[in-house]
Length: 178
Image 1 (spheres, one colour):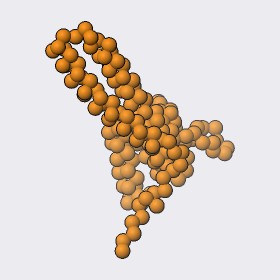
Image 2 (cartoon, rainbow, N blue to C red):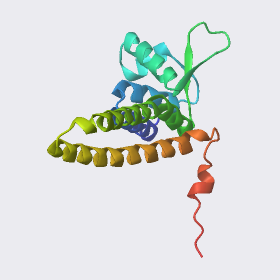
Image 3 (cartoon, one colour):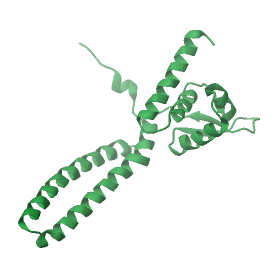
Image 4 (cartoon, rainbow, N blue to C red):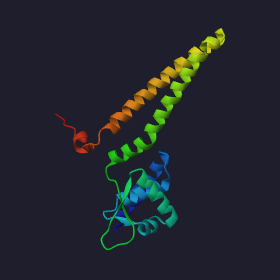
């Protein structure tokens, strides 16, 4: 492979590894995804192991995680018995899968916990002394702000996840001047 192509491939794969770590995934997952994304052909576990110089166990475990997150899928290759994989190339679909599987659940949990806390405070209010009532009112005010934030976050997630359609990057990125 040409030096320039190799350098671009290596830097992109390394960059996706760092980006994956930033978002709470393993660096290996990001590097595997990048390797698959930049491969015009599906790759086997052995291919991935060889390209990234990591153990087959690590490749296998991280590929299962990539499949669960909707970032890669197993594909059939005619005449082959090995498992082959390819990356999901639609970044909006990847983002939807991750948000749907992780962030949506966390936002829902936060709203539930806050709702339960508000209810508990309201039930306890009659038994509180004036100083405790003031603190409870302060808590309720802060929880109200948190609930508003998480409701907006929930709305944003629903907006992103609600449509099964891919975003037309060409339409979004074209800027007409003049």
